[in-house]
Amino acid sequence: MHIGILGTLAVSVNGVSITPTAPKARQVLALLAVHADQVVPVDALIEELWDAGPPRSARTTVQTYVLQLRELITTALESSAEGQAATAKDVLMTLPGGYLLHSGDGTSDIRDFERLSEAGYRAMEAGDFAEAARYLREALALWSGPALVDVQAGRQLETEIKRLEETRLCALDQRIEAELRLGQHRSLLAELTVLIRRYPTHETLCGQYMLALHRSGRRGEALDAYQRLRNTLVRSKGLEPSAWLRKLQRSILSAGENGNQAMPAEERKAVRLSTAC
Image 1 (spheres, helix red, strand yellow):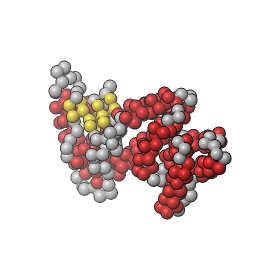
Image 2 (cartoon, helix red, strand yellow; image 1 turned 60 degrees about the vertical axis):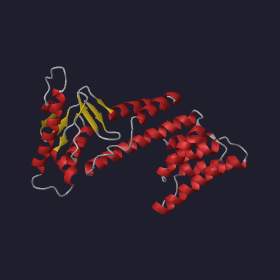
Image 3 (spheres, one colour; image 1 turned 90 degrees about the vertical axis):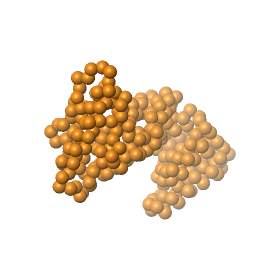
Image 4 (tube, helix red, strand yellow; image 1 turned 30 degrees about the vertical axis):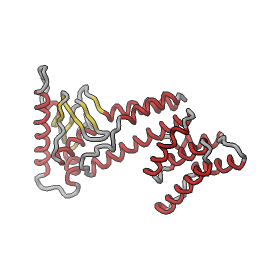
């Protein structure tokens, strides 16, 4: 089995897609796929499909969607040239309280992303920034768009999608930090310009953008970036920037006043701490 979540939903058995086209059946498969090899309670599936207003036939309807998925799985299993001992019920299992999608020895882009990200974080902790950047780039390359972008998401999936987006942003923060530590500030500017427009209140990305601009001799633009973020935070949330970002701004100001582009060690440490996930 292959499970693809980080973009469009793509689940296949023996290379044959078992992803249904019907919206609610897709929701059921998506929730099972996100929690592959774990029991998904029937109540969670009902909440996903109907939120707080399920019909009286909700449990029966969920069973119908499971049967539809098993039909697709059966077709995929039968397509194999080799004899298959497994049945659809072995792949999509009924267990006390719910259902479990058994991935076996298959692949999952979520698991690959988590494995590569963890390797990148370990390399960061060890001070091997080149390896960290490599692992984290590989992890982020698994994303082809927002998670489950083609699935109508209910409450359960919305929570999972937000969680996955946070893990992606964490990996992105750490990859950029690694590349900044490698002196790649100029090559990061175009990407960071796009990112701060996409995430206008994300302080870590703003700090990294400010640092990249400052190191590229663009001190005024770095200070402008800070002011834009501050204005946005005050206007939208009634908040001032975090202490570490204010410290970074003061450091850039003082470096310019002293005619020095270097970042004091204390301020570099503040930026590194801000990117810890």
